[in-house]
Image (cartoon, rainbow, N blue to C red; front, side, top):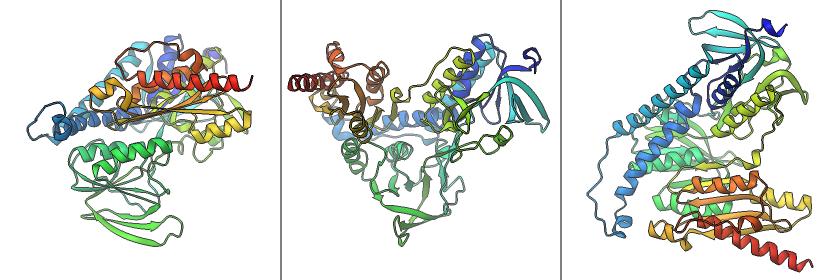
Length: 486
């Protein structure tokens, strides 16, 4: 097909953060762009994920702070009993969602992007089918197509949801009611954040984890200190090695817990509600990918570092995929970065994405964050490349700002090469950990060394000095290693 005969230069299927950034970036660089969305503009993050959950965490965090009489008494403050209105907290989240959704939509319109409402699918190379909300079906041609359809909550077999007594994070962000006793299945970042919200608002929480330890995706040292505060310190009944083999909605909700290894029934629980926080699965089933020969990998669309869709390991011309549907790092900012990388490559500005430098955060109180290698992966990398791995720990209890805030329960673990000093990763638990990790992420992106970073001056007194101390400790190890090898 002649370039001039295409309906669009680029069609993006999905208007979450990945699709939004791709469409906006492309339109701002002169491409004729359309974006297709079957649900709300903004995708999961804006409507059912990051945005409403952070609004709930902000509000419930205020309640927790005001209700913590022991903490406040340390400042000489005595507060009255805390009262809150569940509906107004829910309204705060809903209002924020509406505002950001509107802002994203207007930003696309200002950039000149055509917004098409309906369900998109592939109909062969450079052709997209659109089933409009009205039911009308039509075909559109496009020089390039980006798939950005995101993901949905994963509900394991045996668990029945009703959206009211047994639900996923999609429904939880609406905060329609506060169960007296809620069980959260899964202890990843979603489960931890909602445990933070529910306990702050007075709910009793039981956390169930199928793997052999709670918080299995986090660094073990971070898990040790974080679980002591976020779980044990809040009287959360956390159970590991148990599978929620059957969950039946109702009043009460019935949960059957089985041994993860033997599948033997161990216990039955009766609770008021269950939040299923067992991860997310790609939204890729109805895209008609077979029309262009794409084979999914556990539901994910295979892509290379330039975000080109792969068929038998080779890039398919004119087809790209970004965001959760690629299964790389299922984070909103990863999707956004992938979207701009894909468009830059469409524009013949060759770019690759560096997943190692993308940070992740869990917005509990205090927060947890990480970037780069885990310690296990770093050890494997060190063994393969033949260098000694350096590990240092920096504690918040030695930080003046944390002590002033009476929030000194925190830890930073820094991973680096002892031969070159290159920063390989970091894991942080403590006050504003989600903000602190960005400094390390920037260092990882630039492949900087602790030797040069240790010379940077940090503001005093700030939490950033936790990072500075880690860099200086690491620098001493690098120097000692160099001296030993002379």
